[in-house]
Length: 138
Image 1: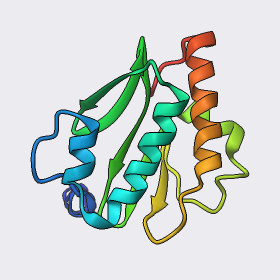
Image 2: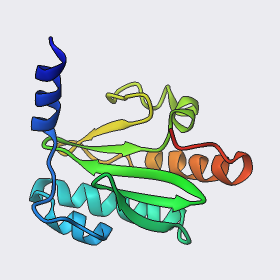
Image 3: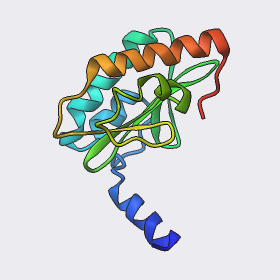
Image 4: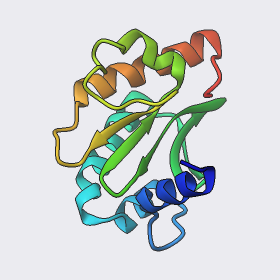
């Protein structure tokens, strides 16, 4: 498959909120209805893990930052992407076997239950590795 076609298909799968969100709650509200529950749930989990982190929208995606980017997430047509870091996913490889993963991301389909405990454990690991080892986001 050529790069242009692949890029077009990836963009087609992407669901961008209709308005340019400046906050995470705006991003969630502007996202498709089928995405909003998962987005609200992951937002609550990440906020509880990193309550003092700065919230931002960067490259069109919600992010949490402390010195560096902690984690990000994004809404797509059929799934939510949670992006901690490649290093934060390694210890959870066995737990993530049933999910489609990328270099530093996990695809979480909207038609499946959100693995809240797993997301919390990964986010806690990522927070700890940033604070203790200053591991970069990507």
